[in-house]
Length: 421
Ligand code: GDP
Ligand code: IMO
Ligand code: MG
Image (cartoon, rainbow, N blue to C red; front, side):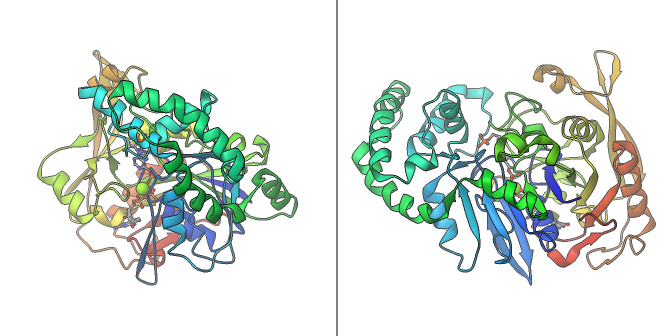
């Protein structure tokens, strides 16, 4: 395979950044194709941790061409803060991506406030409002943003509408001149990287380059195929890559489904295999399950193969990369959800209505756990037999072969069992 999508198979934070960084060692190009700085991707190597929010996870390697594609929504202030920490990198930004402005963040907070008990639990990064403006043709694109005159005209026009909206919601309003002055500085930092990245990517494909498309979030947070309305406002599936990067669909060779060895979720919405109490706390502490972007504690659950088969069907998965296996060491019995009981019937697909999904009670199989510390393991065969069985069972239930597993956050704790590129 030459052109591969890295897909989060659950509710995000599966370790996509880590797997992208690992595979990027053999890639030429890494592309972020949706989302914005709601994402938090952790990359660890040589003992050093890097948290990426907008930048693709190949950015730490100067030999890799990194692309922020047209499907992204980019907060310029956050971009400048992130890029300021780096020195030697290779980056291009799509002239057709959309800009997240300060009023998007306020609108995000205001909508959440009005949802009351139905809160989505967004990251408050303005992602929903920015994509809404894109769809309603009230957005600001990068190409306009980096032209000072055009930016000014468009911003002033948009802010008339947006300030009215903010006023109605009782949210803070903004002075267009002040936003313009501040954001002009960010525009000048972004401008040198801006180009038509569809042209760049199609050229890279013609040149037979190896390309990784790094998804943010996970398929269960997909606007169309996730647990709506408890989702994000873009599509993290493999199908979203062509539209969001400007390449033809048949140029994608396959997808790696990054899967946590258990389940986590930040924010609201159903999660049938959720575990509460001491065991959840134990897993949260060992796995350091706190959000990379917001610091919120992640909800914890058993591995759910109904969810994973849903992801496989929606997105297509060539291989699985199973992460955080080490976190399960020391748990006597491991459960895996294989189907749900709903309205007196056994079901194997996810209902569309969230009140129905909430009512689903998982049917589990139970597998013996292992006691050994596996963080230094370097091969599949070196894993305790129970851990081998757990991985084998998982892959069999999902119907997708294993290509990678990981036993710690560092790049060196990632083990490849099948060739990919
Ligand atoms: P992403 O959003 O999918 O890129 O994932 P995050 O970076 O938000 O969350 C994954 C977390 O798990 C990060 O803190 C990683 O450093 C960590 N991590 C990744 N793989 C492993 C692993 O195999 N074992 C352990 N213990 N931690 C891991
Ligand atoms: P990465 O790329 C986990 C969740 C939020 C909330 C919902 C909507 O690190 O896996 P939004 O701010 O997007 O409107 O929030 O989606 N969410 C994520 N959860 N990982 C992420 O990204 C997420 N990005 C958004 O918690 O439930
Ligand atoms: Mg994350």
